[in-house]
Length: 112
Length: 114
Image (cartoon, rainbow over all chains, first blue to last red; front, side):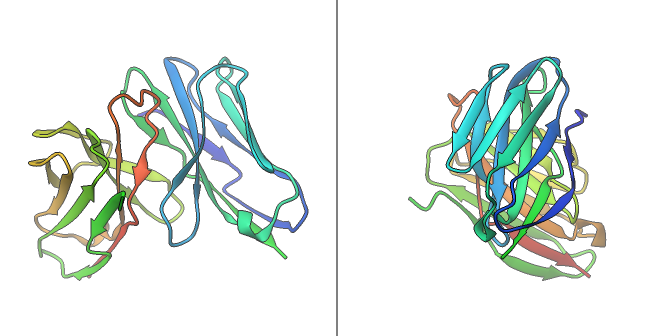
């Protein structure tokens, strides 16, 4: 079983704060790393997929980076808004296993 | 396009009862997955299928069976429900040619076993 770890487990910030969280994964047989956004009472939706070492992706105030050599990805949210409140899951896809392994998620709560 | 749908949305079972959860997708996806999600934990793969008529075990397959008789449907069965199977179950699918494994998820089924 592949180990995908996310930290912190939960985060409470004030509106306007910037924040970031981490996903760690095995560096061998890497193929792709996803970040999914999961709002309460909804289903997870893909936010970013990254495949190359050094990849950076951005969508509005949210961005992500990837380091496949050391096995980590960061998700950054600039100027958090209450609507950013959600659980952010990362999923590591490796060619050996042929399927994704999900982390436990980081739950972000943004207070107005 | 309805995407991925799951039936039922909620269910309460008594220990020992059986039930089947249905997942349907209208995106013509070859790959389909069943996950369970427990408090404080991410998604754990129960079973998956890479095409009609094929299934394979995931990380936590014990106590569950699956069938993929039609490409658009993936059924998850509990033959004799146990309280440890109380969870939220998510189905997902993706197209074979999406090599990065980006998945589309259903809305979930909340199952309680008393």
